[in-house]
Image (cartoon, rainbow, N blue to C red):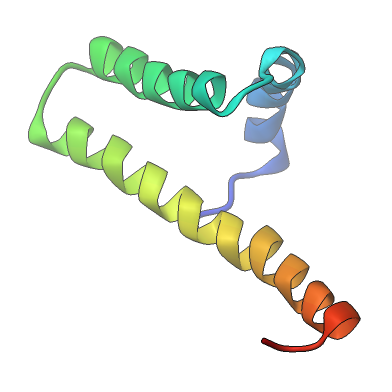
Length: 84
């Protein structure tokens, strides 16, 4: 997953924190992800490259989420409760 500089993160973090404070359900989270991609496509123009960029970003974010957050959680639970 490409990491962005702290300076670029600052451009997004305050708005993302505000958005995160509003998201309360899986449906709302899905809507926000979908809407962000839709807005990027509206701004950049619909093309294979832009559509592919959005799809790829969603897939790679999912994989990074699993690697950084879900897998370590599962490892902790295995230590606590034993393997299957």
